[in-house]
Structures are given as C-alpha cells and as structure tokens.
Image (cartoon, rainbow, N blue to C red):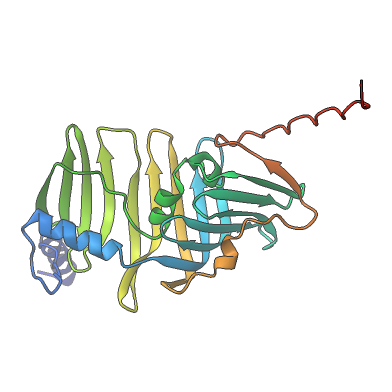
Length: 275
C-alpha cells in the first residue's frame, strides 16, 4: 500500500471511531434526575457579568453587528450600551427589573416606563422578559417544568441528551459530559426558541461560554452574542442600574407596550372668587 492510500485508509478508520468522552468526577451518569440536578447547579454558578461583547443580528427586519458594553446581574438587573463603527455611543438601556430607561443619543431622548418584555428587549428582534434575557446572556437555559425526564448518551456527539417532557412539549438538552453545562437546547411542541453555547472556558471555579446563540426559527431570527473581555461574579456596580435621565434629555414616558403616554392636559386655572 502506498503512502497516499495508507493516509486515506487511516482517515476512514479514524472517522468511524467513537468519540473519546471525558466525564466529570462522578463518572458516567445514567440517572436523568441526577444529571438534571448537576446541570441546574452548573448553570447557577454565574450570577453577574460585566464587560465587552459583539451582538450579531440576522432577521427579516434587519441584520448587522453591534459593539456592546454589558453589565448584568440575576435576577433582572440589566445595563446595555451600544456603539457605532467608530466606537461612538448610540444608545444605553438600563433596567432594575421593575422599571427601564433607554437613552438614545440621536435626538437626546430618554424613554422610561415599566420593565416589560417589550421595553427591555428594544435592542433585539425578539421579546423576552428581563429575568429570562439576563439568564440567557449569562449562558443559562430557561427550563420547562418537566413531568418526567429521559436520558441517553450520544457517543457520536460526545454529550448527554437529557429530554424534559411536559405533555406534548419537550425540551432536549445536549449537556457537556464533564462540565454538565448545556451546549444546546431545543424546545418543541410550543412556540419558543433554541439556544446554543460554544467556546466554553474555565474562569476560576466556573465554566462559561464565550458565545451565546439564540435561534427563533418561526421568526427567522438568529442572535449571536460573542464575549470578548468579561469578568464574572464580581460585586455589581449598582450605579450602572440607575434610571436617571441625562441632564438636558427630553424625557418620554411609555407604557408596557412601549407606546408613548401623552401627558394629561393641565386643568384650567380656577376662576375668580364668587364666580
């Protein structure tokens, strides 16, 4: 056999070999409840994040990439700033979980109102409640309340496949065999979105994905959040979540749907005494 044929033979043989799987200290897990518990614990290890990222949006309405500064903290503290190509501030959105504020440099306008899903998701083509948005950005998967769970080991992909069942609804979780972090989540049987996490790195005692991807197939939308320089689990800077408008900005009050609330007309001045 010549060298070229030998090389082809080796490639074909190796491609058919099962992927080497590295397990955590518990070894292979066969109990779905045990894996579910370890996965929830692994997700809960990240509480706060602060740093820089890029957000790539692909949707029927618009596509493009934004540079961002983020500060987020569970359950619903959110601070997002976006910048243009020349690193000039474009907008800043802040929420304390109850109220939100959005400052847009163009027009010098500050919008404020309840922290509804429509308001806190103004930077995104999908609508998520603030607690759910914070969880996803922290690399965590919102989980359906399961009635039962099933588990198998996908040796080809090298992951656990933990499926949560609730009536006709299923959530299939592809779970890292060593770190017990979800690498992919697929919800079926109800309108929703899929999640994928990539480029995991160990940061101290936690394992965190460098990239978060959200896919809303029904809406034809994909969001890809790529972290470049972030710190985890530091004490949150609470001043970043203050809702005060910048001095001189025009303040606009909006309702939970994001619609401007027109100010009530001033009452007429009182008439002269005895009129």
